[in-house]
Image 1 (cartoon, rainbow, N blue to C red):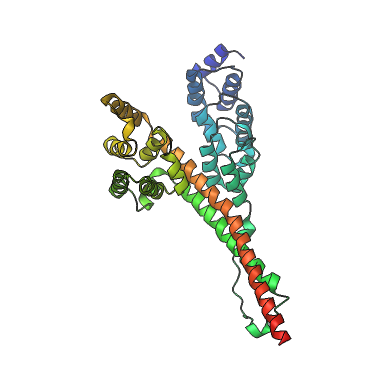
Image 2: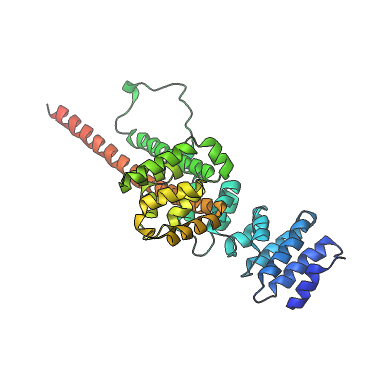
Length: 343
């Protein structure tokens, strides 16, 4: 089917049944080698109003077709990804139109079914892979029931219960880490309004702390304040101001919804050499005005995901250390027993 065929379908007023038009429009679009932005917009304008009126089979067909399409329309792909996994799976596994931020949001909303499909993507972001591994371990968050008949100390056999006492401790420690990871993931998926409503460190207080720490000239003070404001790891906040330009800092400030005057004051305090003349200031203001807040918040969510990934990765060494300490205590106790027996 040629490009002209697709255009005729897209502008046809007597569309007939929604089912046939939905499939035909997507089939025609997928046959285009390099669709224009106008054609991508036409497909979205045509198919999205029909979406609720087509069958599951048609949605499954369209999802499979668009999963192989290099220039798939993002809005239609995102709508299909919100469907149950038996429909969305081809897009979750293969589509290039689904960004890392989209994948994280889908995991937060749909949980393991979508996460398992996403895990099959080639070249999956390691951060997302870590999140999926944390969600894949539900047994680590078991809550032990309180013992109705507690065992007294004189009834415990010192040798036979050593392994049994270590295992619940390891499970509890790993369970706490996994549950914290899930909680961070859920909070990371909040919308900007919800986050602003629940975060006590917003508005003027955020700006004042960022401004005052930036004006001290001490980079570590400002990086700490930035990490607190964005709820990210300090190492990530430090990397945002370690670049030679202020592009990443711009996104961070935009996500906090600071106006351009406040954002400029903080940026010039951190990067004074970047503004040697008025034109540099004008360039900053233009870039800040053109940076959409949603795009900036997407970047912050990715930084939060990196923070969460670090927490998940650090959980295993912590458990290993706990086992080492436990083993050391057991060894010391055994030595004490042997010494007592020799006496």
